[in-house]
Length: 143
Image 1 (cartoon, rainbow, N blue to C red):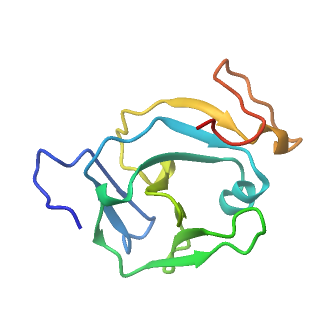
Image 2: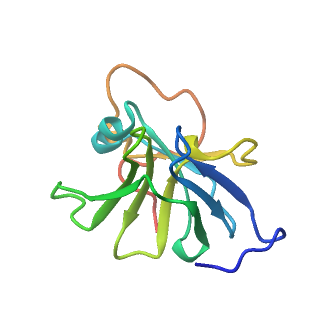
């Protein structure tokens, strides 16, 4: 865990019931909306995520945090973080990356973030359309 000072905290967030609370100690990336079929099932629609280096995520409360390994062939090294008390979907973490992806809806307001684009639009569902001019990618975000 990183050393915490009032000046280093950039954002905070948590689950619906408070059994998971976290602080972000580094800069967050803008929000990317993921329209893949996994995010639809994980969130009930598209997933809106920011990310931060995992060393910059500090848990204030994690009694409710449970990590589940992805069971799909497309994402075999991904773990998803939930609150076992209220069921909130919170994190997406590829174990071969230093980035951890944070569900934007779990951040405290104001986030001071903006949506910067859309990924996996090749899997978008038929019940909605994207009506903005942000970058759209058929698959994942370009490296």
